[in-house]
Length: 401
Image (cartoon, rainbow, N blue to C red):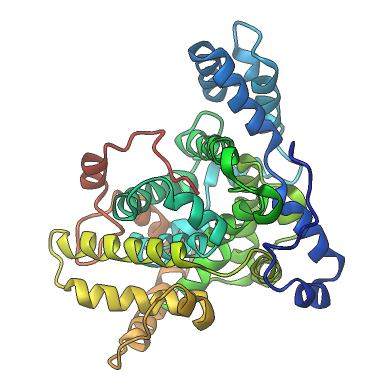
């Protein structure tokens, strides 16, 4: 997949290109060209939607729900091409996998999914200065942070559920909507964006960063609280999320050889070296997200932890997941002297041992975690019903990045 925009070899946005070349060889220079790579299929669909309006949107919605072959009228060219790509399931996809869903993520308690996976994935996304600059234009950080926490949690839950990525299912629809929203944001930003020097906003490398946030970064954070996964579970996790990447329009050259945490780390290291370091916008967005998370959790029914206690816990989790260097640049404080993480980690490891002791206990644990989250001291992000009522989130209200 290549972009409609002319690839650039300008390394102004690259942070440590020479070091990247020493560690990754020609792959580093390839990544620089990807700084200006977008998603041609989705970008063309946005152009058609602007041209044909409501009729094209109606055709697209119908095609996503029921498939290209079900349409009663020939769709516009770009919409037809996108639907064909979405329905061309890669040969490596196991149909049973899609029916089972992401069984690895399903085994993570909602509380820790919210505190570790969602929070660390968003902070990791904000660490890209190009993404942060674009998102900072979208409105007040405090409002946007609350909205993104809720919508990202809703999307992630829809995506990992059994059958969530089957054609027309909520996770499938929401994932494609994310892809089209990225394309919409690119189109709007390019009016006054120096793509040659800064790279294309929400382009391939930024999408790869977001994808790693929900795989490598999220599970690094979970491991830090005692929720470890086996090497076989790693393989299953990346196989499932490779299909998510396919639906998101991510170039297969970026994720095709990412099959476990080790290969994900190599991609992460390469991205960090060519996409710059967190800036002021990154810090503002991260602080707003942490504030929104702590306020929501402290206000949840039954909560026994104060905002200060929750904030300290989240800061600790983020520093462990992102590393001290990135955490420092994001303005995440050092943990307090009274660190409860060793106790939390021990308790989670003991709990997970019994949850995964046998196939029957593992299946029971997954069933339990798929139930709607109940309010508690640290319920994941926000109780779902409250979150939807407060923000007006509907099926199409999903995260921008």
